[in-house]
Length: 312
Ligand SMILES: NC(=O)C1=CN([C@@H]2O[C@H](COP(=O)(O)OP(=O)(O)OC[C@H]3O[C@@H](n4cnc5c(N)ncnc54)[C@H](OP(=O)(O)O)[C@@H]3O)[C@@H](O)[C@H]2O)C=CC1
Ligand SMILES: CC(C)(CO)C(=O)C(=O)O
Image (cartoon, rainbow, N blue to C red):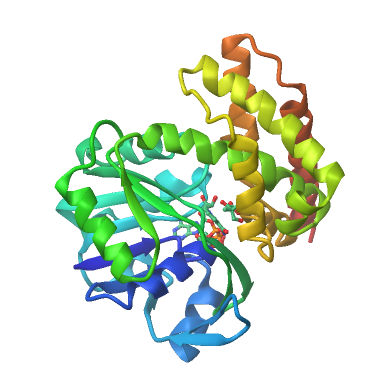
């Protein structure tokens, strides 16, 4: 089986490296040329949770036309806003039975993929693993968490169970799910309560759980998001706040993916996370002042540094 990691940044590199422990052939693909060239020259280095460093020799490409083999499985790990463009660029390396699995955060990823490829070929997943991009060719494993894979709707199929087994052989705690859309909304609560606050303040995930002020703000953000989720038909577990803090603790050394975007002055996924809660809140007539303010702050921060980048 040939697996193409579409968007081999922090998470795509981590999961690609772990999956390379199985019988699958892995290709990392990212448009980040420096990262890919470093992997081609020295391999991928991973700073592990215990502080040790592991090294992986992996096939890596920085241009879609350099990808050698057709993909049986494409794992989509570009940022949500880049999904359609990235997928369109690799279609020449897909065949009639290629499967597409999104493990991205936020709402709307499955729909974005299904705009480019056959709906039947798209699987939905979520992961609470954490990964930080340190420098070209080097990432940090920022925390362990469960990965779920399922059909977008309905019970887990044979193909889902095969992928779950593959992930497990790679050493990743993975389960199949019959309620993947529900789990995507539960993961949205986690990201809504962690990512935006870490992005605006520069803290690592662990402080969300450790600092009372951060816990309060996270709680206020998630409580609003839960009201919106319920209005959309997704009942949230009563212990959802505990789950948010548990993920923050399990990924304590990680900078959230949105935090890393701000650190690297890159566009964030705010529109697919807190921004989505605001949009759905408007549709459902549920006020979301906390999420709206946090979204506006990230958008101002983002616009500021993206504009600065344009100035020669
Ligand atoms: N990091 C984490 O701890 C976690 C992240 N996630 C989710 O995983 C997804 C990926 O996040 P993360 O790995 O942190 O993000 P990164 O930005 O580290 O990785 C995305 C990669 O995709 C590359 N890219 C951008 N456009 C294209 C394109 N058109 N074709 C191919 N590659 C492209 C980027 O290059 P460049 O650097 O040049 O932009 C980058 O290397 C997100 O949805 C995130 O929310 C989920 C759980 C945890
Ligand atoms: C699990 C967590 C919070 C890890 O940082 C994540 O999903 C992210 O950073 O986007």
